[in-house]
Length: 423
Image 1: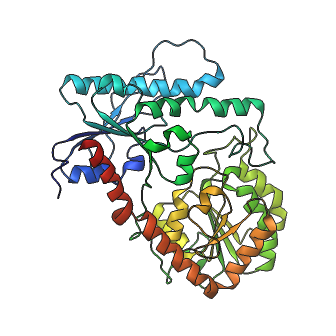
Image 2: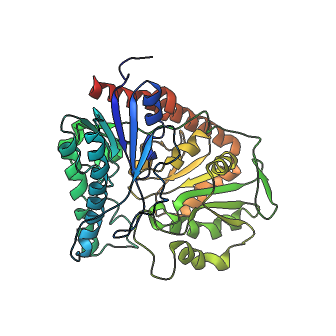
Image 3: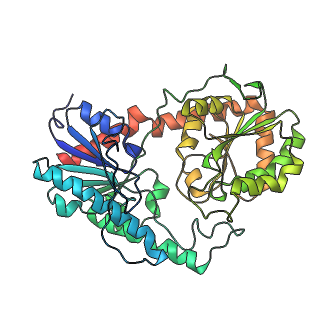
């Protein structure tokens, strides 16, 4: 084991630690580094911190949870509120960092997610420390996700809001010594002058956990047990919303289920919004697009499972005969790579983030995001020809092992980047 990390002080920062660092942080500690993590309490502004508030979160890395505080602030313009929330996190984090500094604990390397604001004052607090930042997305008012879907054209206000979101990533791009983006697509949406300091390193997929299992059986709440012999379609997202193609998928179901009278559809996701605009007040995107086709669906064959534990999700991916993943040109979901690692037959949208990991006809199938009929045809093919899909399933898993495996590829890359900054 390398002695490079012995007693080297490394600070991790993420409001929801461990976040992207659930593997890297413990690995550095196991290598002998003096690792600490700082996260933040989800306590509303202008409220006192209860004495029973937890000071740490369950993890193998010593973790401190700092309370959120804010100074005096006049009423804010709505466009400034997202920036204000980041300043609140940054000022809150600085109180704990100042205490550590005064006690003599000064990190040599700080690793954090740059999108939340808690890394605000690092260069002022620890001017000699190296900073490694995780960058997820840089917003564009035209030509990317915001105006991708003509069904939801952005207002001038929405375009302005998107551009203002970049105030923070631009600030952070100037503060870090090196940055990390999980995919080439996500790096390339950032301004080109910064590409040289943005390393493409994925967080990694545990391919020994996400494995195929042809003998898988899943029993739903109604007592229905499904196996790989059944025509099972899966659709998985954090929340069911247009950014992840939920509306396109729902509109494909009537024709698909009419063509496959024995098929079952398993839909995983919440009814809130993770990325795009909120649904009209009093409803949800899930409900809007379900209501649009409800009269054409057999509720005994369309199963909304909500949010499920990760082990349950693995079983669904192992079970799937057609796993559908649709997305605007936006951040790539971990769930797609997890499904591929399980050798699920993937039908994905022909959009830039998906094309980076799926080549049509080799390790999955691609369709135009908006072409509902093409989506029906590709899902139907996967359901009807499981033997023909087997080479694609095998190649999907092989490609994840080759390019995104946690232990053999991604974590070593992360550690090498850390070594270069510490060395």
